[in-house]
Length: 263
Image 1 (cartoon, rainbow, N blue to C red):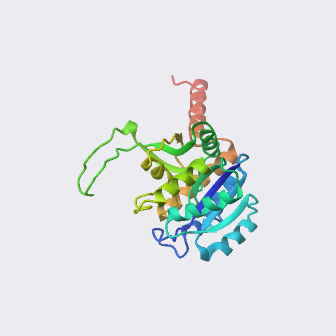
Image 2 (cartoon, helix red, strand yellow):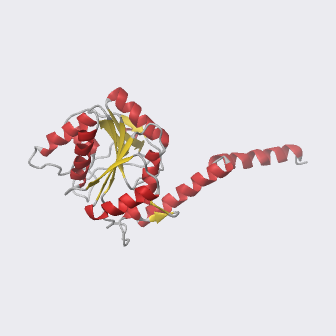
Image 3 (cartoon, rainbow, N blue to C red):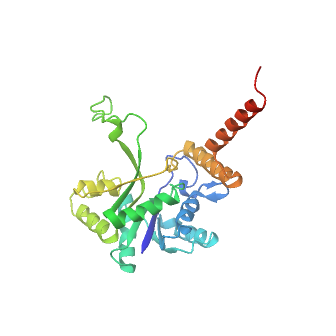
């Protein structure tokens, strides 16, 4: 089984909106539904589980029915922390699926991951046991211990930004969570599955993601996502994107110059 686990338990504080960011409507559709459809329509995904705040379970259930998310296998209430929420979904999946299932952990507010990236996550888990979707850092990354001065500058060619999905065998990621939960500090500073695995000294494999795989967190992100949707619509309608349009114009002017050379 290949199982997508979508976590949509945020309260939208950084967005400043009246509703959690995963329920904001963009192009007439909630962000969460944009995300769920990526996995609904991917041929290799068998099931989808969703984690939300308990007070939104009925609403998400209605959205899933309205938008025909037929692969949805369960809606699970969130826990005390984001990692507790993930653990709740993992345990539900454990009770209903084989232990060697591939699970893809994904943010409900990352609505623009490429289908090829989802495929590569699954293949990476099958080959290496893990997949951390990442993109190379195009800017200089600096480390600061005190938040006021630079303590280290890693080589840019060695720095990446970890995104989602982050994918594993079901039994492996549950075992990692169980190990972390036994520690007195539990999930302190455990921001994602990649952090959990590396803290335990377990190897993780990089999968290259797409640059548009943003996390819709701030108002600026909403505008970026709208622009990405418009770009995709243009590609579908006209059969080419911005790069090809520029090349088409260059070819047009080249042919025009050949037909009417300057004296």
